[in-house]
Image 1 (spheres, rainbow, N blue to C red):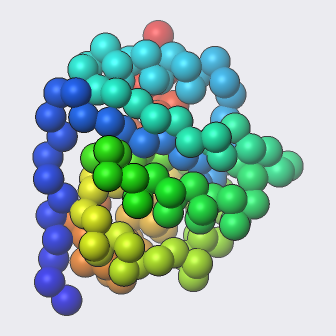
Image 2 (image 1 turned 90 degrees about the vertical axis):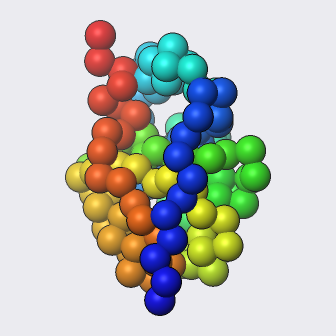
Length: 140
C-alpha cells in the first residue's frame, strides 16, 4: 500500500476535535480551543466530544460517526483527539479506511489514540502523528 502524507497545516486552517476515548470537561476543551485559535487555527469541536457513557465519551458508534463526519468535511484539515484514557480501540473495526485514504488529513493524538494512529497507518496508509491531545493545549 502506498504511504500517504497529509498536507501540512497552514495558518487559518480548521482543526477538528472529537473524543475517541474518555469523556471530557467543557472548560478544558474551551481552553484548548482558545490555545489553538491563538496559534492561528480555526477549530471545529464535534458535538460527540461532550457525549458521556460512564467514563467514556459516548458509544463506539457515536465516536465512529464523529470521526467519519470530521474526515468527510473538506474544511477540516487536521483532527486532534480530545484526550486519551481508554476505549478508542473499540472503534477500529467500524472505521471506513477508504474514506480516510481518499481524504488525507493530519490525525494527532497519543495514549489510547495510539490504536487509531496505528490502524490509520496500517489500513489506510496514512502518515499519522503521535503528539498532543487537546487536553494538553488547555494547560494554563
